[in-house]
Length: 188
Image (cartoon, rainbow, N blue to C red):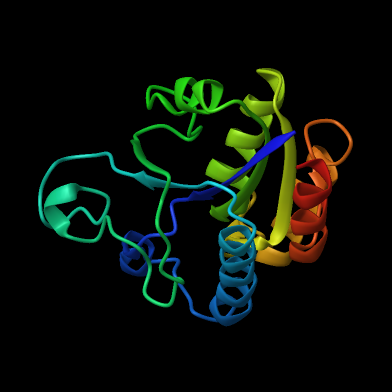
C-alpha cells in the first residue's frame, strides 16, 4: 500500500494571528520534523499544502501578497513531491490533490500540520470518505486555545483530545510518529 505524508498549512501566516502562541510550537515542530525526516529516509512522497485566502493584500497574512504563505520557521526543509495551495479547509477541495494522489497510486495518507481541528481534521474526514486509509499523527498537528460560544476557554489540549476521539476508528488510525512510520514501511 503506497503511502504519502501530507504536511498541511505549516506556514508563517499563523504567527500573525492574534491567537498565536509559541507555547506548544517546540514539541509540535519536533514531532513534525521527525515525521518529515522519517518519511524522507523511507523515500515516501511528501506533499506540502499551503492555505491562501481572503483579500489579496499585504496585511492579510493568508494572502500571497503578505509574503507569509511560506514554510514556518523551524520546519525541516524537504523536497516536496508536489505542492498545492488551498482556499478551503479540506486540502482535497479545489486543489487537484485528489487527482495527484490517485495518479501516484497512493492508498494511505499520513496527515499532519496546522490546525488540528480545522484543516487537518477536515482533510482526514474528506480523505476517508473518498476511500483513502488515513493515519492521523496527533503529535504532528498544532492548534491553539479557543473560546467556546458561551465564553468559556477551550484549551488546545482539549481540542486535540476531541479531534482524536471523533477521528479514531471512524475516519483514521491515530498514530504516534513512530507508529505512522512503522505502518508505512510495513505496507510498502
